[in-house]
Image 1 (cartoon, rainbow, N blue to C red):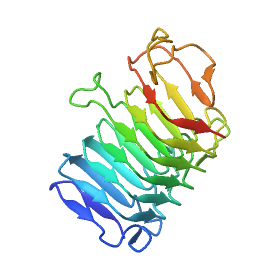
Image 2: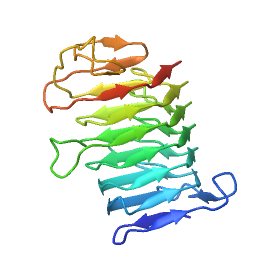
Image 3: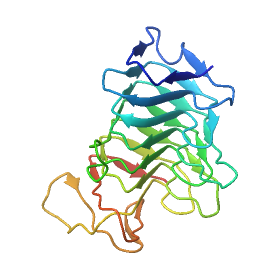
Image 4: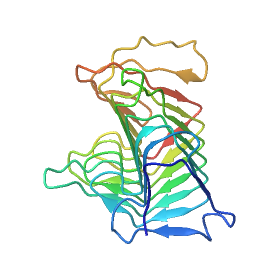
Length: 232
């Protein structure tokens, strides 16, 4: 079945853990939808699987700042609608500042972008949101299937997330297999800034397996700290 929280904050926690407690959407929508929920809403200790929707196959988050922790988010898909726009196979984050920690986000697919996670217009430039925290997650073997797809592991669009202490590996997309960032302003390199670094924005700029695309427009800054990006 599916879980939709749109009017009340709840803590939903599995005592037995994700390998024993499974939410299976049977391709009938996003497994979990969180609409304008505060940090008092917490989803913890579940396997979330077989979700299928236009965006956010596993989890769809709009507004607020809920917490997702210690879940396995796998086998979900964002298939798009009649105009396409299939983003966020595992998790779709829109105009919100959730805390995403200690999850395994594995084997999800998206039509257009963000096979594991898509972060869309979530940052100080969007009123009421700052900033998504993506910490200590394993994001592996997610795919974007379109020939022009971007961000196999993580896609960041016009947003300012903090991505820290995670492992991103084996994800696939036509561009930015691990991490693709678009619509960001130019940020000067800071080679002496320590383990946290903001990369400059330039066409086809890459650092390891991170790809940064830079159309004009929304200002944003992405911080990547102590994260391992490999094989994507």
